[in-house]
Image (cartoon, rainbow, N blue to C red):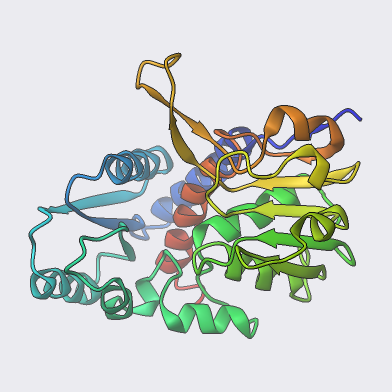
Length: 294
């Protein structure tokens, strides 16, 4: 079977142009520029790269951006005080705290301290709860990016068997809920599999759509996939490589070379779901600036 590559990079570039155009019109009407702030704690390599990408993307679409950095010995109290300040700052439309955080700081406390109306990561319990019951909210970035890819490629989801591998709060749970909602993309029959699932291979072989989000490199093999399935690979694990300058390369959760020939559509890693997560963050910030949801 000839598969089609789902090109997240191309779609994200297209959406950036759409957002930039909308921002231009807002500013022309005398409205303020959307403003995103990012808090980063410590010097985690992955986090620093992500934050740099987020700031650069803000510039590309005409947003204002503010980067607030703390050393990794910052106290929880100081961090919460900064969050409170951003909650009250009328110029900041949305902000995120880059995860993971150092062990001595409670991620739960930090997420719940963010004003849900500025929670453009979509992690606050109010946004998660509203998503569950189908009310307008900020949907977290990766699930929202996955749905956008399915939509832009006109991939049918209604009545399809969709298997989600992984049950994290950031991807697995929300994407499973969104895929079963009465909407497009959605209306799928969803099965969630995880590390305790007994007959994973049999379940995957029934799937029309597989969303792999477990963080285990090349976990999904060809013998787990039926002909013509749609494969969405959310995994990004750094594995050592002698072929790259950085000394590592990104591997997805799907054994791409062997799975792709059986697929109808498949996302590559890198360049599939990854670029879409930043787009979702920009889109949520735009919605926050326009007061569309709250």
